[in-house]
Image (cartoon, rainbow, N blue to C red):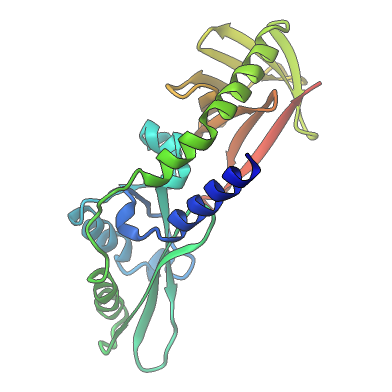
Amino acid sequence: MKNITIFLFVFLFAVVKAQTVSDYKYIVIPAEFNDFKDNKAYGLSNLLEKSLKAKKYTVLSSTKNDWPSDALMNPCSILNTDLLNDKSMFRNKLILQFKDCNNKVVFNEKGSSMIKEFEPGFQDALKQTLVKIPVSNPTTTVNKIAETTSTEPIKKQLQDSKETILQTSNFVRYSNGTISVQKIQIDNSQFILVDGNSSVPFATLKSTTKEGVFRVKLGSGESTIGYYENANIVIEMPKANGDYIKEVFAAK
């Protein structure tokens, strides 16, 4: 049994290792790139989005409330985009990168333009990198292998977590170490977390088609996702720079 497990792990690793851009359907373009902000954006995001859509990719924003359910359920089916200013005195140069869910670079291409003006120069450099991107041809190989080897344990874990929570009172307290919230079950498909100190709703969680995964509406109005993990409630809290941080609320 141990040998089979090792074989499956090695096989899965080999398949993931071989992933290319065309294996993906979804690509996230952030609201802005660190090297190309504000008046230095040069229209690169629009050019990139237009090109990716022409090559059959589905472009997503960094705001997860707009994501389709299959993207929310499988974040490893998504690539994240980065544009780097490859600074040079005599040319406008940049690097286009796509990274997977483990922050590994799947695609890395350099572009260089002799055009001296920044906007047309950087756009020309980006166009050179876009030529190298293949047409999207999504693969489900990795997903199928992962489901074959681990669907049942995960499903059981989610079910156990759900039962543990539902068997307790409708009023359960959770804490992330900084704030304390009270879980109030509204119905079978949704519940709210209320700030224990102010009685103000902290978040509303609604079920998705994926068991144990929720669409979350924060009290601030922002949207994100949440899920059960070992009887704890986990919420991916959005940060100002567009990234997300994992907040774990443990039952008290």
